[in-house]
Length: 222
Image (cartoon, rainbow, N blue to C red):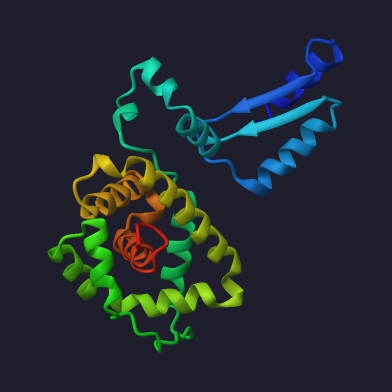
């Protein structure tokens, strides 16, 4: 963008430009983008905006007809998943778990009978339920403690934003999946595929999705 600055400045001085918008196929770093926008605004432009892949993906998700009109295969997917929020939460949680000085409270009991009832309502198979119990439930108390810690309020908000977004999309497209096993697997793959941040943390994405389901943040409970 340093090379673009003098070009934009010249265009403005010649009266050829008032607004400047940049679209990029990369994620937009919040802090550096703000500094860059302020630099370009000093030229005297009426407005300056930079849009990264997260905004572009969100707009395409909100307007699926665009995918259809352009013939992209993604338009045939049940729904699109923005991996950003949950990715940040998973990475932060994994770092906390790996921190030798970090301790969690494990007082919460997650083996209540309502889990079995919820599975019937959502059509989660017994095999998958057993998998959640054995592979994911041991982390549930840690996740609850992590999200409850005031120091992690930012990640708690990201978690709930991600859960609310997924819950709405699942409600709309639930009929396209025969079991909730497939719902969870689809979301996991959509979040982790081609996501470098989660290359060594895929297991924890699955654990968080299981926690969301078990804690009734996603899925039906009545």
